[in-house]
Image 1 (cartoon, one colour):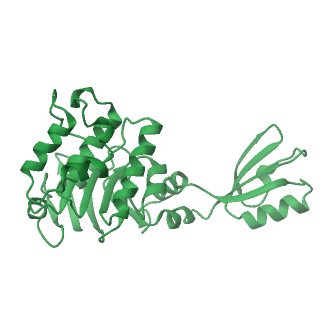
Image 2 (cartoon, one colour):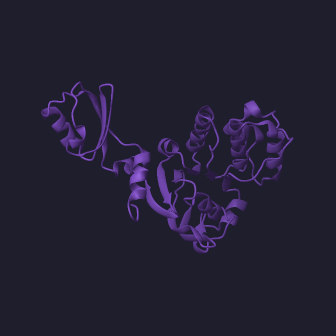
Image 3 (tube, helix red, strand yellow):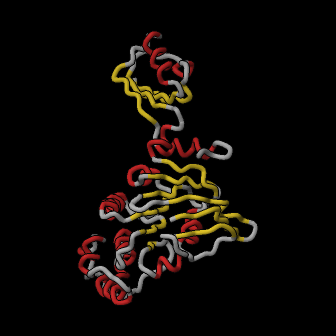
Amino acid sequence: MRVEGIVKSYGHVQAVRGVTCEVGRGEVVALLGPNGAGKSTTLDMLLGLVHPDAGSVRLFGQRPADAIRSGQVGAMLQSGGLMPEVRVRDLLRLAHRLARHPLPVEEVVRQADIADIARHRVDKLSGGQRQRMRLALAIVEDPELVVLDEPTAGMDVAARHRFWETMRAQAHRGRTLLFATHYMEEADGAADRVLVLHEGRLLADSTPAQLKSRTGRRRLTFSTTHPGELSRLPGVVEVQQHAGTAALVSDDSDATVHALVVGGWEPRDLEVTGLGLEQAYLSITATPGGEH
């Protein structure tokens, strides 16, 4: 999959501004950004639902419509309803009959983890169950690439956990997964690569670990009985203290630790860890022009 310099505007609003990226076979890639960042518009252009004003999209070397028609691409979108008053298995059988090269129905049921809801009516499903049903429809033709737009929006914690267990199994089968999300922990835990979109621009394309390391900052937590102005220590940019426990954010953790020890704070149970993806995202989007 490759997009080259795609641009899309709606009136005076430029939703996507010259995005270029490539996704290889078997990768799990997160398109990360808040609502309004251009994620859904980018995916719509990728799937041929919207034509770019400029730039090009190729899926497996073909136009999106041709790749989708051949069954190489499956999609799970936010928009679009499911047929009401129909049982899950019956809807799946209908999709199976319409597909050119479908997987066996029972294999789709197993891969999408919907055996427990197969006899339920579609209009009686919970939000998480509906998303698993949409995933089943997306993989009926055994596609090489599955595109998902905010797949866990509205799910509770348990449903999201179960959904991502299913998606990890899809990745293990060799499918390429591209998913849009504004949940930092999903991108961090599920993706091989993260594409950071902000105001329609691609600001970063990297692994979660590389993105987190870009801030150069570390979090230091420890216990101490000595009060003091921790904010004056070298490298410290943020301080939180409560009930004898301190948490510092430092852009020079070595200097901060040295000053703690020689300055008499006597830190106990000291831990130094990297910052999370959320802090990395905020750092990248706060930088004019972003990072690549």
